[in-house]
Length: 409
Image (cartoon, rainbow, N blue to C red; front, top):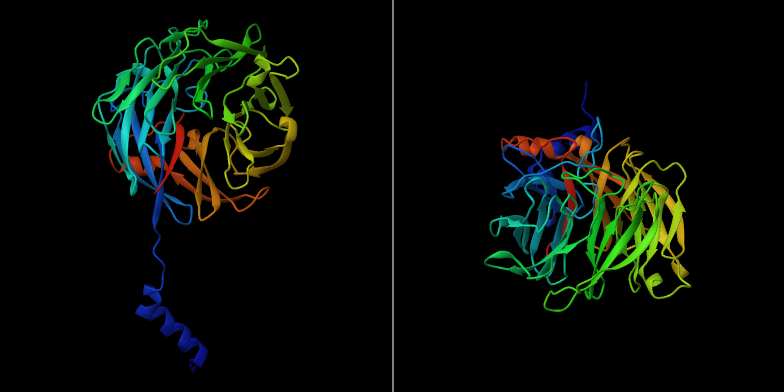
């Protein structure tokens, strides 16, 4: 049997070293950070994965946070959302730092990030007491010089810290503020539990979000935040409604309004200006058909739209916010998950956005490419437990939490 000319050329190409050399090497362009939230043994770990220029990720390292993780009380069958919150790990692009909560030991940890190699992360100092019990969310200002945390246990409220590149987190005197929530340690929820703490866009205020319950109002507590880190003595309270379950605060640029994932309906638009303007509505709920438990939210810089994860349905809901803060449903992105899709963040590579979402029950990071508004394509599913196992560290389902992205400078 004769070998055809085309077959010979094809075989020689496969065997050619030139063919092997032509494979383009991927470049690292950022990193993704998740906490193991382990409540015992080795304790909480910062799980670090490199982001490559095609948007995909690869597990790199686990760094001890020096504290313990924790899980809220949900009844006989604990769910995959251990902290009932968004913002368990946050980063500052300008300050090159990451801060995490250690819910089980009532502490916070701070890490330095190498801006040229964001997967190179080091614990900066020993953990610091959070100023309360069961810290579940943390916020950093843009410069990475100030941090505030939200404690959600029996001793609940907020506390703020200076960021020192030698000593780590240093408590700012007289910034502990009590929320007077009727809670336990660990907290019971999700109804009636704390959700997230964030800075306002101008960094002159901090906002702490609390979910409602059948008998209690959900609310946002607002403190003035001075340049030296001091807080106003009393919070202004924006009451929302009974029974609402807002989990997140994603600011709508140029406004004092936020998009919030709300497991009771779909999502809310929360307008802080309703405090001073009776013509404005504090909370406008938007029903998402077929939603089971929408909780977390993030804004895409490229599309300008908002993406929310449904922890029970396992999909990512895309919405837009138009004039007069009106919400519009765009589409649902199917991740082929059926439960426990939690925290998410976004990274921009070459003008295109990628969503990184944590699926706690599978211990994976799901990567969705967003080429334009209304479009999304699942491109990867990274199992964190496999990489951690090579380091001898267990990653427990139902405990992993948080999601933060840092892009290389």
